[in-house]
Image (cartoon, rainbow, N blue to C red; front, top):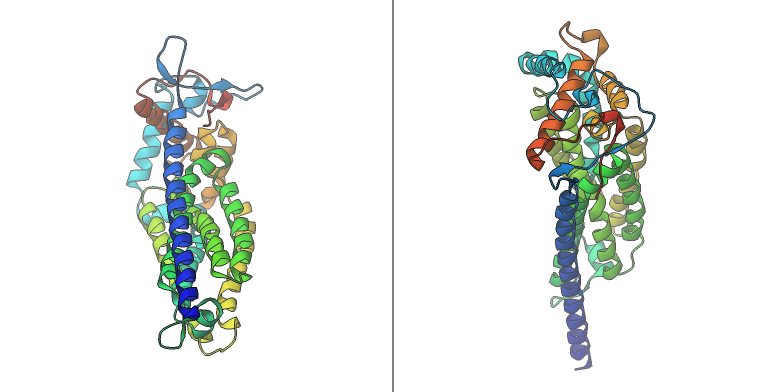
Length: 368
């Protein structure tokens, strides 16, 4: 009789706890979406005449660079930059996949490198779901079921799965803001280091509550990985290579799942706690080497031009292309002009007003 009452009390407490966590994460996700929308609206301000324009603040000491339309101080498309943009767009459209690969081979390699983080995301996502079938994991975190065997309560299984997804949703919503402020490289490195720290919570957890907290926190950098690898590939790769390299990120997700299944298959015969702790500990291996490699990766030229760092964007384009296989019609300055003009066109389209006349190297783009 006493055991029945205690079991009911514990079940009620767990039910309330899981429902509270799910509702809390739902509210946080909604708040993140609202904040993201508000941040985008903050990009738009009004000038003295009451017209909607993009706010810009000149910086001192910037050098002029005639290669880009943004650096000509024009609010509309520049006559000198338009032919350069046309040449760059025509060359990108007419190049074959093989020629694009030869020219943009370094960009492809860097894109493949950054996509490795998606393997970790696929690995971690499948890991927890398979733990529920492991006797050692159920014995450590579960309760005795009606058939006398240990099992994880259904509510806790749902809570752990939803907790990880809630963290990923939050990471997806905040990744755009982080990239806009910090860039791809810094955002990815910070997320990798955060994953290393959060895995400690899961590895050393002694209860389902701590395990749930760890799953939620680990979900945040995993959500960042989902979007940044694909958008980085779209930024640094030419038109003909984007379908292949953006699809490769999905392949990395499947590779992570296969690795997860293989590791668990090798350890399923163990009868101690390391049958589930070793797969968790393996998540410490990849982040640090990948973070070091990303530190040396070139930043997205689009992000650099967007923040007025045109010389850095030129150096990034130089690193992203193969100088030995450049066709005679290819020019870094033409590509830089195309990027600059497309950014101007985008902002003019979104804001429905001309961009403020200022040199791009002197523009300090607004942040929310």
